[in-house]
Amino acid sequence: MNRRNFIMAASAAPQLVGASDKVNLAVIGIRGQGRHLAGSFAKLPDVNIVHLCDVDERVYANCAKAVEAGSGRPAAKLVKDLRRVLDDKGVDAVAIATPDHWHAPATILACAAGKDVYVEKPPSHNVREGRAMIQAARKHQRIVTVGTHSRSRPSTLKAIDYVRSGKIGRVLMAKAWDVQLRDDIGHKNDSPTPPEVDYDTWTGPALMMPFNENRFHYKWHWHWNYGTGDIGNDGAHQIDIARWALGVDYPRAVAGSARKIFFDDDQVTPDTMNMTFDYADRQIVWEMRIWNPYGMEGQENGVAIYGSNGSVQIGRWPNAQKQRAWGFRVYDVKGQLAHEEYDPAGDADSSHHHRNFIACVKSRQKPNAEIETLHATNTLLHLGNIVARTGRNLKYDAATETIPGDSAANQLLGRQYRQHWATPKV
Image 1 (cartoon, rainbow, N blue to C red):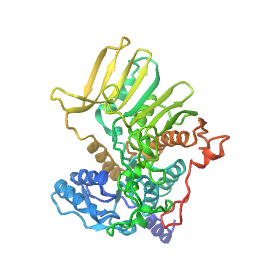
Image 2: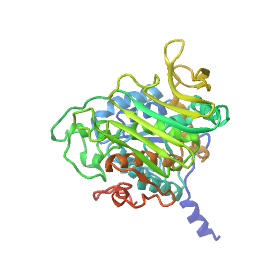
Image 3: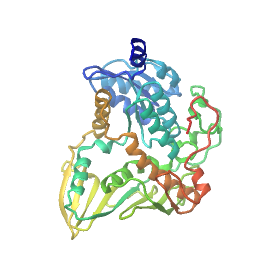
Image 4: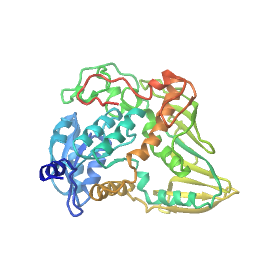
C-alpha cells in the first residue's frame, strides 16, 4: 500500500473512542423513554450528553431537568433536525427513543454517519427494516444495541444460566405474557398541528395522515402506521427472554388469534392476543390482555420456562420491604417453590444495559443486545402481528425471511413508505 492509499484508507476508517475518553452522546426522541435514557446516560461519568433532539419543543424542559439532575451540568440545547446531529463529527453515538416507525431509518442514517447506536425496542417496524439495520451496522462497522435491558439484568442472566444448567430437566416450552390494564384512549377528531411540533418530520417516511392527538405522543403505539401494538411495546421484553431461555431463533410456524375485543376507542392494534411460535422440538406461547387489572401468576408482565422436572418464572415480586424487585423463582416437579433470587430492591436494571453499551462503544466488543440477536426476537413480534392483521396462521422460511404461499402476508414483512429524506432502502 502506497502512502496516498494508506492516508485514504485511514481517513475512511471508523473513528474509535479511547477507553479513557468520554463518549459524546446525542439523544433522539426525548419525551417519555427518551427522557429516561438521557437522565440515565447522564449519570455515567464517561458520557457527555451533547445534543437533545426532538420535533416537539414542548418536551425539552422535562428532559433538560433529567440531564441536569443526572450530570450536574446544564443540558445541551434542543435540536429539532436529526440531520444536524448526524452531521456533527463530535458525536460518537446516538440513543434513539422515537416512535417505532423512526427506529430503523434513524439507525441506518446514524450508522452511515459513523455513529454507534442504542435504539429502543422494538428495533424495527417490520422484518425487512430489521435486516437493513443489520446490513448498515456491518457495512459501517458500527455498534448497534437494542434497549431490551433484561439482556443486562443480573437476575435474568442468572435465571437463563439456571434454565440451561439442566436443573429443571429438558426444557420444552416457554410462556410470555402481558396482562395489565391500559388506558381507554377514547375518540378524538383530527385537529391542527400544535405550532411547536414539526409534524412532517415526526411522520418521516411513514404515510402521511392528518394530525390527531390519539395518534401522537405515546398513543402512536396503537396504530399500524407508526407502532407495533403492545406485543412490540411490552412483548419485546418478555418474548425476548422466552426465546433466549429456550435457545431458539426463528420459528417455522406461527398460529393464533388476535383482535380488539374490549376497548371502544381509537386504538387499531389488538387488545387481546394468543400466539404460539412453533419450533422443531419446543414452543413459545404469548398471551396478551391489556384490559385486565389483576395480572397473571402475580405478574403484569412475566415469563415462565417449563422443563420436564420443574419450571422457572422471571418477573418482579415484593421483597421483605414490600418493594418490587426483579428476580426469578424456581418451582420443582410438584409445583413447590424450590429456589429464588432477586436483584437489590430499587436496582435500576436499565443502568446495567446503558453501561454495557458505553463500554462496547469504547471496546468495540459485541453488546449484550446486539442488533442481529434482537432481530430474531423482533421477527417473532412482527409475525404475531401479521397473524393478527391477516387472520391467518402462517409458515416462515427463515433462510429467505419470507412467508411461503401467502403474498398478502409477505407484503406485511415490509411496509409502504412515502418519499422522504429518511426513507430506508430495504
